[in-house]
Structures are given as structure tokens and as C-alpha cells.
Length: 226
Length: 221
Image (cartoon, rainbow over all chains, first blue to last red; front, side, top):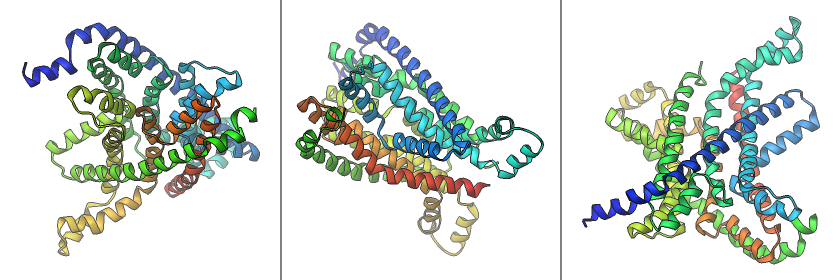
């Protein structure tokens, strides 16, 4: 066997790949479920915190800023380990899936709150005053005047963060979540062959490359300079 | 509750283990941040050659690493390469994976910085007799770096946080050591201590970033 043949036989072994393809596919489903849950809850919580912050209630705002700082400063893997391995000592056990979801949603919440808040404060004060003076209430001003402009500004930084944090679903493998990397790793140790890992790598590209390319386009469209 | 999560005796007992981890996290950061910056600068300089044959592969390279989770890259190097007869060990794998991954991110930031400098400045610099590299080094880069300072800092924060991935491939950094101490003592205190150390270490940077970002926004109004 030539070196090339041996390389292909090791890293792209057809038999092994065929055998473990279903595992990788089921891993992809778990990764997609996790990613969708994280994006929806993380961005939702981030926007909610930014809106609460705009009410300008002092003690509440300190609490929000501290929470945001906390989840910006802690590495996501540390939060996952803390929830998965730490909380059971307080008789509070979460599965690996829920631990990963909670951790990454909290991280995305923190980053997106900062971005949403920056977007809201970037709308000129005069616009607030003008729309309030036309008889719109605080809520109406926020919803109909400020947010539509603010959200537009937040899209480029937000897509970047969201992708970076959603990719973190791979961290779930540390707490035994059966997402792509977890499936690929166990298939690799079962078959003594790295082909499943190559499939797993390809699966991530299939899922995330289109998102990255789409994000690049969105960023161009909504670029900071207007 | 405090007996479980913040047990004083266990803090004292696990202190040397956790401190050794902190030292390694700092060392690891001091290696991978300059490595990533260097890789990024290299990519950005290549990107300033506006030839399609350079531009497109470069864009594909950056998009590839934006789509690829760093942990997958790390596992690929750590568990995949030995099958090709190349066993690098955890530390080297972390260094290479970070060079590739964070290099791509730093590269995008430097590129944006370089593109923010009007072409007229380069032309002016060149017309005074500066060489291409001199114009880049003395005129473009200093301004470019200043323009993207918040992004550079924010990425650096991410890189330092990312060093915790080293724990997966048995690099004895802060998280790994805390996990070891936890399984030795059957108590979560070491992990809580590690989390507090991470927070105290990185909080000043987060505060600074928050202020820089707000100032950048104020300037746009």
C-alpha cells in the first residue's frame, strides 16, 4: 500500500464512515437542537435585560451590569463544569444537555445585553423627547421609534457573537452530551480509527459555514457606517 | 451551603494545586496571545495584496476557522494526528490550534483596521519617499491598531478564556487543576475558587471594554 492509500485508509476509511454515519447524523440533530435553544433563549433574555435596563432603576441596573460582567469574564467551559459537576453537591442535578444549554444561553445573554444596550443608547436623546412630546408613551416610543433603529445597528456585532457562542455547543462533549463531537469521539474510540472525527469536522462545516457566509453578507448590509 | 461550596479547609488544602494551575493559565496566555496576534498580522498583511488569487483563499481560510469550533480543532490535532504517527502532546496542540483559530479572528480585526485608513495617506507617505513597508509600519499600522483597539482587547479576552479548553487535553491549567482538586477532595470548592480567580483576573478587562465600547458609540452619534 502506498503512503497515500494508507493515509486515505486511516483518515477516510469508507467502511468505518458508513458504519458511524448514523451516529454523526444524530449528533448533528442534537447540535442543532442545542444551538436553536441557545440562540432563542440567550438573545431573548439579553433583549429583556436591555429593556429592563432602559427603565433606569438604579439598584436593578447595578445587578444587570454585574451579571453581564460575570458571564463575560467567566470562560463558558468553567460555567458548564460548575453547573454540571458543582450543583449536584447542592442536590441540584442537571443533565449535560441542560447544563450546556443554560451556560451558553447565559453567556449569549450577557454579550447580547451589552450589544442591545449599546444600540438603544445610540439612538439620539432628541428622538426620545420628540416622540414623547407627540403623545407616545414610554413603551410606544421604545417599541416604535427606538428599537427599530437600535436593532438595525446591533446586527453586525450580534451575528459575530452568536456564531462564536453557538459553536461552543462542542463544549457539551465534556459533560457527555451526544452532540457531533461527542458522537465522533466515542465512534473513534470504538473503531480505533480517526475517520469518524473527520466526519464530525465536516459536519460542523456543513452546519456553520453557511451561517458564517450569510453573516458576512448581513454584516455588509447593516454595516456600522450609514 | 458555605461548607459545601466555599469550604475554608478545602481552599487551604487545594491552594497549591489551584495556584499551579493559575500560573500555567497565565503562561499559556502569554504564549498564545502573541502567537495569535502574529498570525493575524500576517493574514492582514497578505489581505492587503488586492489580488483575487490571494484574496479568495484568504477569505475561505478565515471563514473556515470562524465556522470551526476551536475544541474540535484541538481534538482533531490531539486525537487525530497520532494516527498519522504525529503525537504532539497537549501543550503543542493547544498552541497550534490557537495560532490557527485566534489568528483568523485577529486577522479580520487587523484587516478592518488597515482598511479604515484612507488610501490617500499611503499615497502621501509614498510620495515623500517612504518605501511600501515603511509606509505600512510607520503610517498605516499605528493608526490601524488604535482604531481597532477595543476589538483587539475583546478578542484577547476571548483567547484567555479559551485557554480553559486546555483542560480537555490534560494541559494542567487553572480549570484542569481545579477539576483534579475537586475529584481528590470530593468537594466543588476548588472549581468555585477557580471561577472566582477567572472572574477577578478578567473583570478589569471586561469593565475597560465596556467603557471603550460605550465611548465608541458616543462618537458615532
